[in-house]
Length: 497
Image (cartoon, rainbow, N blue to C red):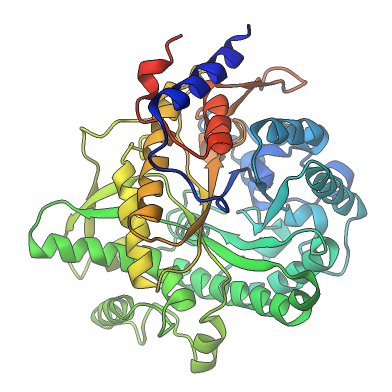
């Protein structure tokens, strides 16, 4: 018997032995996720245009940890049928993947649609449906067409209209079969990492100014896409549109009032920055965010707030532009109050003024920022429930980083802990969570970490031209959870290799 099948059998036997005191609801959906730049390859194949990650990794390979790029990656542009076979084996309900804007619209603009790019996504979507797998499609997962960056990128307010044009084309091309759409993946990473910290493409450093300009454009772009779908496509296509926001859980480091307030400030000014305009009853940015940035801007001698304001019409336009709340969550942080001098350089970090640390007792992963803190997910879901009137939540990413072990018991332990926390949030706390997505289907190009970190349920041999995929222990574990809708508490006592 193959080792992977032995693992699967042992897991099934363990469920029979230990029972199922907590079970996922019958209509709860399980999936896995990927992103176009991270897996597709074919970076200039069949008419695809250049995007900002193509440009960054080609011009500055030394900015990536292993000096690699996504030119080939997992080669899913050619091996998409293998991807679907893996999905079928896992028995997932849905597959979350992103469209490459540059593969469909090579210049970023809507004047020319690339037929080969359209064919690729049509083939993938049709194969998924043929195998009983729902496509969940992200319109934007960080890979802006380079020509749009040349005109300023997301800080340019015209990008909201260009994104609407792109979304409209995607709805027209694929909306007859795609019923779940995500406009943006992780706005904080787009704007903070891309235009403030210089951490991700296009690697600009304009914290406290460029990131806020980017944020306003992005929120308006999301609302434009939502409303154009609602008006023109929803009546026939009957789909749903949401946005995916990434969030940590900010736990007060101490029980001192100032640290409790600092943790709440962190939640409001990072998660709330994006969620409050869309999901809150009042709309607009959180009051604490507007007040702090406005007051600091005045003290810094700016003529107006560095946070671009919305008009009343824009507030109403963005408010309520959702059918679900997409949530990416990986880890938690301890937060304490931090006093930063008024004459310090302007930055979002200065505006929030908190110190973030992680408890050395928390279990580590291969990523320095990712510690195993399952209870943080439960607290985060309850915060969203209270703050935004318990919207339907789709967890669109959650996963663990290691170095590619096939017997990836760190990932099993992570999934077990976080899915248990999720179950408790649903069944005991009444959090309205409808779906869970494991990141990722397979090891891939992890942005500026290159191929040094692995998040996949499947191992990919990146030195083999065929990019062979091999299932890990976590693939069997996740498959069993999907089939039994139950999590075993004492799994590590049962499986010994």
